[in-house]
Length: 329
Image (cartoon, rainbow, N blue to C red; front, side):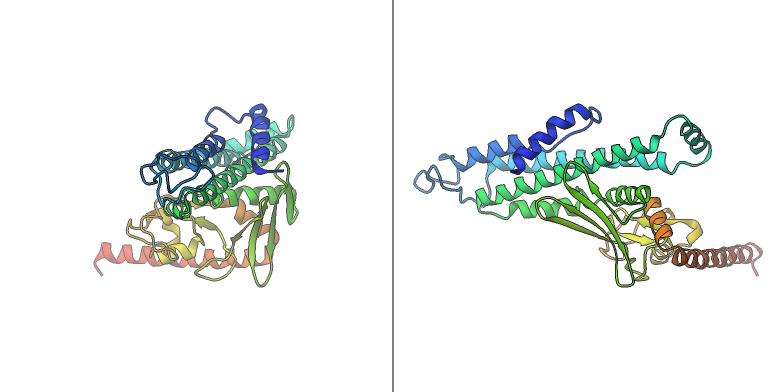
C-alpha cells in the first residue's frame, strides 16, 4: 500500500479516537498538491517557458511559491506535533509513576478499574501519531528535493535538528518505549496499526532501544553514557536531547550531585554537542532507569551504591567548606 493511502486511512481512524482538539498533523496532501502545481508550472520567476515543459521537473534550487508554503508551515506543524506529543507522554508517565497522595489515589482506583490498560492504549496511539507524521514529513521533503532538484529538504532537517524539533528523536519517545517494555516485561513488542516494533537489547557490547517502522525506518537509541561509557544510571536528558547519568552530567557541569543539574551555570555545555544552556530544563528519565533496574539488577545496585557514597562524600566536603568559610579558619 502506498503511503498516501495508508496516511489517509490513519487520519480517518484517528478521527474516531480523536485524542483532543490540540492534535495536529502534517498537511501532507495539501503540500503535495502545492508540489504538483509547482512541478507543472510554466511561469515561475526563475524558470522560462522554454526551460520547463509540462512534464519536466522544476530545475530551481529555490522556489518562492513552495518555500513560503513549505518550510515556515512545516516548522510550525512539526513544533506543534512535538509539543503535543511531549505533553501527552508526560501526562501518561506522571500517572504511571505517581507517588505520594496522587499515587495512593491511583492505586485505590485500580481496585475498581485497571487504568494501566488505558495508559498503554493511549501510549500506542501516541507512538503511531508521531511515527506517521514523521514518515509524512520525510516523504514530503524528499518529494520537494526531487521536484526542485535541490537539497533544501535535507537542509530543513538539519535546521530542525539544530532547533531540537525532531519527531523521532525526542527523549519522550524513548521514555514511552521504556514504559511499554516495563509494562509488558518482554524484550520487545509489536506496535499495532503501523506494523512497527520496539525492542531493547542490553548486553556486554551494547545497550540500545530499537524502533522499527515501515518504509525501512530503523532507529537505535543508545543507552550508553558518553562520559562513563557504561549503561546510563539515573539518566537525565539535557535540553539538546543527549542522555547521561546524573552523576556524570553533574561532574561535566562542575556541580555536586545533591545540588542537581539545574544548579549548573547557564554557560555549561553539553559534553557531546557543546551546546550552551542545556542544563536549565533536564528531563529525569524514570521509566528508562526502571527498565535498566529490572533488566540489570546487579549492575543497577552497584551503581546506586557508588552514587550514594559519592553523594555523601560531596555533602561532607560541602559542609566542611561552609563551616571553614563561616569560622574563617
